[in-house]
Image (tube, rainbow, N blue to C red; front, side):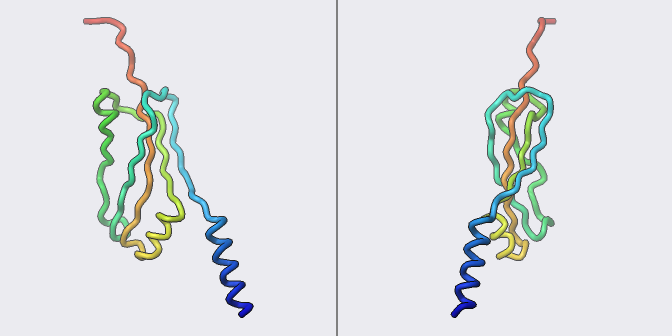
Length: 107
């Protein structure tokens, strides 16, 4: 019975102390938009995945640069990846578009 309590305590500690990890890429460009969040999906250990992540809000403003990009993973996404043995792996992307350059004069 003691082993069961030890196993339950270990499992509870693993869940309680689990956290997400984040990678952040920032540039010196000023932020022009708010944070947009997108979930990207990868299948079969990365063999089938999205080629490009669309950024409609940056494209509609005519901005071709990002001021910040974050790649996040959390316990739930990791658990899904482990349960499916890597066949399905989601990841969270957050980005901010850069501020468009102001027009100085008409030609």
